[in-house]
Length: 167
Length: 184
Ligand SMILES: [Mg+2]
View 1 (spheres, each protein chain N blue to C red):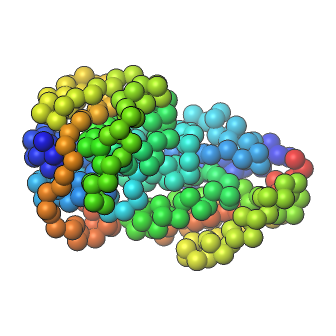
View 2: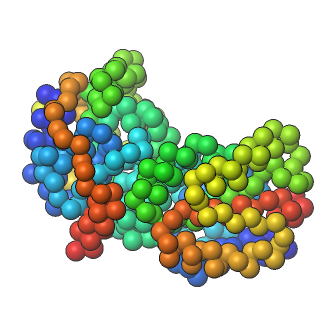
View 3: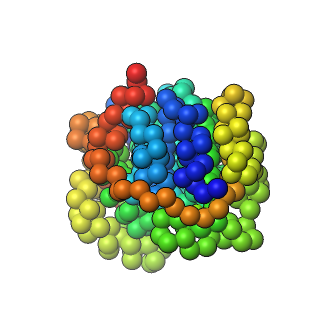
């Protein structure tokens, strides 16, 4: 089941022409990162920090590639300036597949602290935000990617523990 | 020599190449010295010039020259391992190391004290790292272009800024003409 969801997400990225993906890992995202690595049509470049990753994505977009970033919600704070002054200011399309830690099923209390702020921060930044809670929510991913590259904006897809299933 | 003198010196070498230029006074100086569509000026986002340039170099075949500063590289020090581990031979990172945060009033950086950015780059795994004096920058940049190898240049120079106007060109115009220049 988990294998299927990772393949599904990766297939949607590929079919939308996304070929440059940067990641900062999260336990919930391990499967999709592993899946990316198996694809020849995706260049996967791990970054050390999420704002650095967004810089890589901006460069890749200008170089003619469709980028995406995969990251954890706890890192949103370090990306605010980059989202505002690079991604939004220069109108770079950027799908942000984000593990939504600190939601139902979360074993680590500290993760809840950033979960409380996640949607408020994204709303404050005027970032279109989708929340995948049920497994079937993934069916919207393809359309979200099309929307992102239509409007040249960063778009957040929050994926919680219930969506990813047992871990 | 200060940064603006170096930029004047190397402008003929940069001409017609894809250049990603650091936020603040470096971009203002380059804009005043030799504005061209193939210059990408950062108007914000301190620290990410090297990352933007790397993403660009990895995504298309033309040479990319990033003009960065010591303060900005220190801000985004995680960039050096990423560069080292994702070698792309069309990438040149020129760090103009004047040992100060030039755009904010020349406050000293650690790169002007005990920290060697060239040694940090080497320790991160960058294979071709050249430290040079300001006067030799043009020669070293040309050699890097000719070598066809990814190169990190740390150019040691004096602190100081030329008085240049703020760039008023719109960000989307900068990005759009840059992408068109790239495709041309
Ligand atoms: Mg400096």
